Image (cartoon, rainbow, N blue to C red; front, side, top):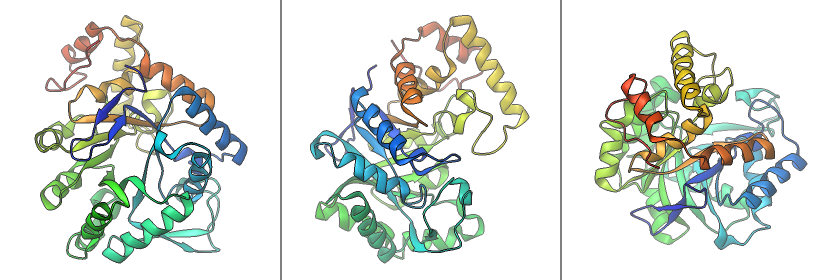
Amino acid sequence: MKITDRRPLPRTGLALPVFGLGCAQVGGLFQPMSEQDAAALFDSAWELGVRLFDTAPYYGYTRSEWRTGAALSLRPRADYLLSTKVGRLMRPDDSVRPGDDGWADPLPLRPQFDYSHDGVMRSFEDSVRRLGLARIDLLLVHDIGRRTHGDRHAHHWDQLTRGGGFRALERLRHGGAVTAIGLGVNEWQVAHDSLQAFDLDCVMLAGRYTLLEQDSLTPFLEDCQRHGVAVIIAGPFNSGVLAGASSFDYAPVPVDIVQRVKALQTVCAEFDVSLPAAALQFPLAHPAVVSCVAGAHGPRQLAQNVGEFESVIPADFWKALQARGLVDSRAPLPQH
C-alpha cells in the first residue's frame, strides 16, 4: 500500500488518502517546535506525497491551525484535504503557561468547551480565519464523551443534540462550507451514540482500534460499515508505546500493556517486522477504515512513518498474532 492510495468516504464524494499527517506536534505537543521546523515538516510531508492534514484549535491553543494554514497556503487548494475540529472556543487568557494541557509553548488562549449551535458556528468561523481557507473538507466534533467530560458529559451532549450543535454541522455541510462532518474522539461509545443521533459522514477515532485495542469492533465498526460511515484511525501508536515511547494514552504505561507490547515485539522479531509498521498497517484492514493519521516531530520521523506504512509485511505474521491471542479473532487482517 502507498500513502497516495485513496479510499472513498461513501456519503461525500471525497476520496481520502490512506495516510495523513496529524498536526498536534506542530502545535508543540509535549515539546516545542519552532516555526522553521514546522515549515520543514510540511515541506517534507508534501515531497513525500502526504495530502491529508489534520489539525484542531486545541493543538497548541491555535498554534497548529496558524502554522498548518500558513504551510498549506503555498500549495494548490485542490491538491490536499484538511480536517479541523469544533467543540472548544479559544478565549484570550494571560494566565496560560508552557506545559498547560501538555502544550510546550501554547498561545495565550484558554479553551472553553461549547458544543452548541452558536459555539460550533463561531469555532468554524475562527478556524477558517486562522487557516486562511474558505471551506473545510472535514469538520469534526472534538472530544465529546465521558472520557473527556466525566459528569459534565450529559450537559455537553445536550448542547450538541438539543442545543443545535449537530444542526450547525448540517447547516455548514448543506451550504457547502464543509464537505464532510463527523466526530474526532478517543472513545468509540460516544461515536456509536452519535450514529443513532445524527447523519455522520465519518468518525476520527484515536487510539481505540489499534494493535493493543480492538473493543470497538462490535458494535461500533460493524455499524459504521453497515451504514457507510467512514472511520479514520488516529493515534495508531497509542500515544507512542507502539513506536518505542514510554507513554500510553498520554500517561505512564500500565504493567499489562507493557507485557502485551513485549509479546507483540516477540512476534515481530520472529518475522523480522517492525512494530511501528504493524501498528500503522493493521487498522486499514477493516473495511470501515479509510485512513490512518499519525503525527511526527520532524521530517526524519515522518519519513520513517511513511516507510513503515509502505513496507511489506507477510500474511503469516498477522496470522501468528491472531493465533497467539494478541489480536481479536474477529479482526480483519491485512492482505498483501
